[in-house]
Every structure is written in C-alpha cells, then in structure tokens.
Image 1 (cartoon, rainbow, N blue to C red):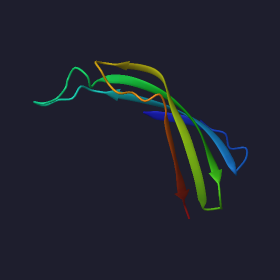
Image 2: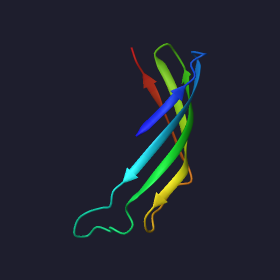
Image 3: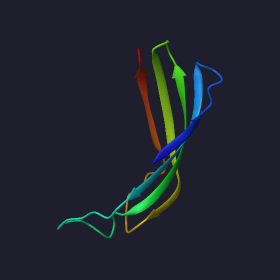
Length: 89
C-alpha cells in the first residue's frame, strides 16, 4: 500500500512525500525457502516532480526503509533511487 502528499504551490517544481508499506508472505512450493521469504517493510520516499514543458514532467524519488521485520536471511537495500518521465496530452 502506498499513500502520499504533494505540495503544489509552484507548478514547475512539486515536492512530494510517500509512505510505502510492503507485506510479503512466505514462498510456497516444493523448492521454496519458506524460512527466509516473509516480512514487513515500511519506506519513507521523498521526491520531486519537475515540469519541463506543459506536457512533459520529470520525477525522482529516494526510498528509505524506516521499519523492517524480515524473517530469516534476506537481502535488503539501504535505499532505492527511482526516476522517470511522464508525458500527458
């Protein structure tokens, strides 16, 4: 589940803040590693959207974990960076 806030006082630069919640169930199946696949993670994701033209926007976010409860041994990033473009008519 994800939810967030946007501050739209300036149409050219819009700061944003998201909260992302992830719940993973244990893997299933004959070859599943059921001991190291489940858990819960909460991320705080500050970001910004910039207006390039009236139709083109660029955005970027940094996703930082603020809570984790993972079972077993799992790889877990310290942060994740994402970005992209959005074009709408």
